[in-house]
Length: 359
Image (cartoon, rainbow, N blue to C red; front, side, top):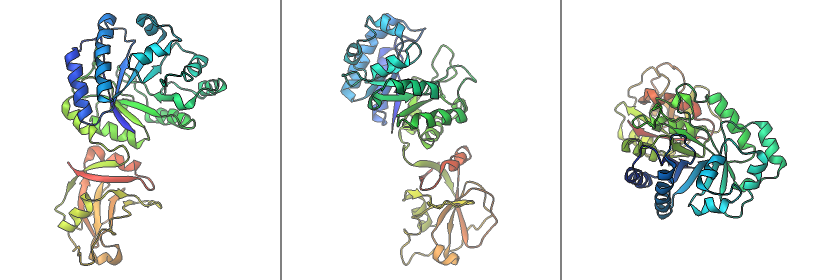
């Protein structure tokens, strides 16, 4: 799992700005660069000159380049469609095959001897296509997938469609990536963001990224270039394997603070119906640690609780409430997940790891 950015050449982005953007992204933990070589609005002569500079920088920074390509782009580049070595020599790690290529051609491309990965469109894939592709015996080790981004308002896909497509691809063990938008710098000419999921179009990018990783995506890309530095920073900090939850605390004692923030929690393998139970919170208690009753409120979805000494052997157990629960003198309410991220608890299933950070 990893994170990437999108860089667009031949458009209204200065080369100097793109170079600065790539360097910033690398410092914040981004390791891949997505670009498109068939944007209708692009100035192609400028694009190829800028691209060569960017490819050289990415090689220096050890960042992979994935290029969206079409038959027309091959013509524009002056390359034979069957000469993938020329593409690899440009510094490209993978090409995303969109419209214009048959299943037979894609299977042939996966057998290239140059180490060039071939990426199919995860958003438009069908069972029929995958079965046809399989009939041509592709090299699955060289095959991966990437969802679309959707510049026009209301055209992003739904979570239902997203899951359906991903389930198809996972049968073939294909890596899957998807896009989140920036809320600050949106790419033209539409300027409505570049998300994969429509529900992410106006959502904080770090929340969008958290949801995509929770949905099992292997790599998350910013669709828009150039996102704000703060957006890069917050998305860069996200763990791909742990659900990070921002919370507000309600004056917990020092022992409770330690339980909340100093451990990576994991939901039990026998997940409870009403709450999420941390498997390791009680283990963290020392023999002489005492948690007195405090803030024993009625509990709401997203509330974080720790059992106090009255609950005997359960003392120290951390839970997240999934539903409204009554007040219990044995249960201290120590904090709450911020409203924008409460929905993420729906992704904390059996043995899923999670942790807390202050808002």
